[in-house]
Length: 165
Image (cartoon, rainbow, N blue to C red; front, top):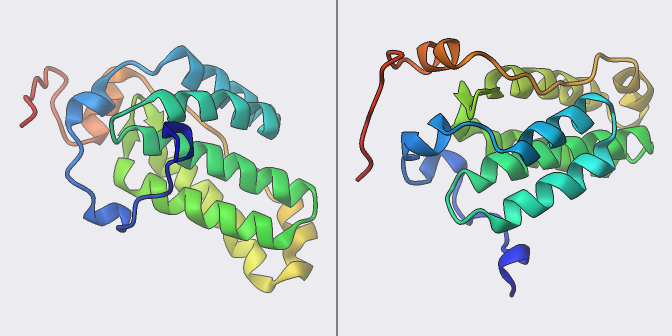
């Protein structure tokens, strides 16, 4: 199995090792910003391509942040293609992966993204007949917040300088 094709972790996100805060305190890579712009423009396939390269190259657990955003985008792509099963499974997987990164990571407002994606998934709870209603729902968006606000939302002072390990 190649580095690129590593499977999902075999444990729930809440069981992963505690993320080293420096991973989430880093500035967002350009590819995450570009993928987020593509996501927000409804260019879900392009977002997938951009974030897949970033996810595959990242050795740290923050790779699951990238993969979570990617999967929510893929879920939205399936929704727009009227693929109920694909939409629900990918949205669910993305929500699960992003759980450990709330409230923010790399200044991405993960809590808001998860809330918005969960609303779409809730509309889809009506089964395949919920596809049209979900398509009319406001799509989730990737939003970056200011660094100070990001640290405060995570419960850390702006001058936080924690060490890992």
